[in-house]
Amino acid sequence: MTQNTEFDLTKHTVRELNAALHAAEEGSFTVLNTGGAHALACGLNAPLEVTLKGHAGYYAGGMNKEASVVVEGNVGTGCAENIMSGVVRVMGDASQSLGASGHGGLVVCEGSASARAGISMKGVDIVVGGDVGHMSGFMAQAGRLVVLGDAGADLGDSIYEAEIFVRGDVVSLGADCEQKPMDPAHVDALGALLRQAGLDADPASFTRYGSARTLYNFHIDNAGEG
Amino acid sequence: MCGIVGLFLKSEALRPELGRLTALMLHEMRDRGPDSAGFAVYDAPEEVTKITCLSTTGDTDWRAIDADLERHLDAEVTTTVVEDHAILRTSGDGSAARKRIIEIAPCVTVLSVGRSIELFKGIGDPDDVAERFGLAGRSGAHAIAHTRMATESAVTTAGSHPFSTGADTCLVHNGSLSNHNRLREALETRGESFQTENDSEVAAGYMSWRMREGDDLRAAVEHALRDLDGFFTFAIGVRDGFAVVRDPIACKPAVIAETDEWVAMSSEFRAIDKLPGVAHAEIWEPQPGRIYTWSHANRAAA
Image (cartoon, rainbow over all chains, first blue to last red; front, side, top):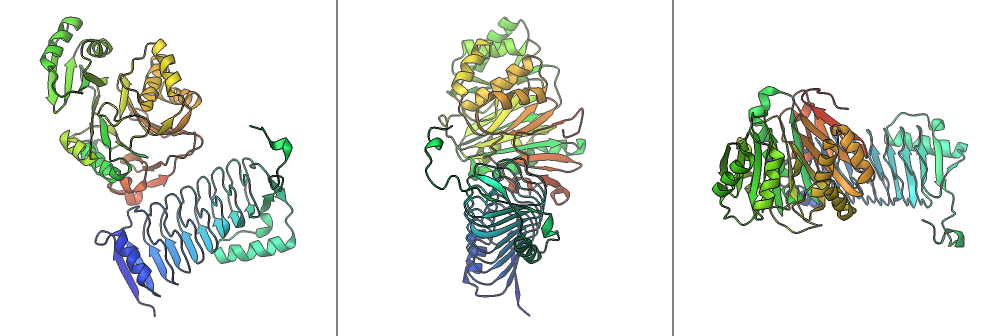
């Protein structure tokens, strides 16, 4: 059995916590009295298991590599931003820019995420159990953003080759984002991702969105608009 | 970047704790706003009007102002000096008093006027400001407070938040307004007077103007959403309650938490984490462009 190390943030600083996590090569860690502190479990670079028992502030699990970080609460802005691999799971709600610019790995938010979820994502898979706010998937380049609830205005604005799947309603699609056909291969792949995320939903009930690719090249008719 | 906190007590039993809890919240927002801080506390309305003033030079002759006001208002005025602030109490007309003080005392900024509100502000560490003006010892029904990182105008005490230009109305702001100069001119022609170059003071003046025109708090905020251009999370205090609103783009953070005992808002959750019973609070991020209000008379979030 792996040894569990406890960190109580009323007794240790965030810097001490992160230094210990950076020094470890394996093991499981439980963080108590998180108190909404910023930058908890950031920059991990080993297959650790970290549980934050409470709400976290900005950038929780940011820049994660290989580790599995579970937040038993809500998170502030930029949770799992620039994640490279591993898993960051939020059991509550997430504020804006969830998984921003993430390159790989999996981000699961069991509650809802607010504005700009998956902004500029570059390969990460983000699965949100509830709703996402406006401008989610903005400039999303690669990876998958899956929303079991509804999506706010301007979904997938200026999207590149990321895929977006939404089960509920979409307030509006952003520039150059369009609905795409949902082929059996998409249903299978989405089903596998939902199972990996541990969220129960029928993959066939989702609508797929992606890039219309009209902004990829300069077009004279676009000049001078707005 | 700035930090905002607001605390609205549903429980009468907690009222003696209002200042202490607000100070705890303000402390957590120090690093969002190390330049200056301020707070407004709303207690049960007094029979008289309280005018909270700031001496920008520190050597104001409050007795002379008191005497002048008594003549001008034809009413008794009593003055309590707290550091570089003074609270003038009078049964006379509060807005006439405000106008008179601005006219005769260029080194005095009128911070607030009302039967409920008392408002204090200062430059430097927010904890020091809270300490200097005895925030922790104050009781009341609700409070809003602010830590400022200056972007749009100079770091001065007068330029610190909260801003108040109307009776028992004040506002704290995280963000920046882009149409404040034109709006200030428009409001001046409608009778508002401003004491700083600060964009947030324009928002406070706008709210006061709308409410003078007959808007209730919600209607005034609805108008503000239409007429104010820029980034904002506002917490707005009135005698009976407070409101929270974010601009539709919502770049500036906010979180609200509610229990049976209190409603709290802050820029970040860590300020709310210190409140009693927070483990049982309902916590959410206010939606962009949506208005949230609470009043003691009608305790329902809209």
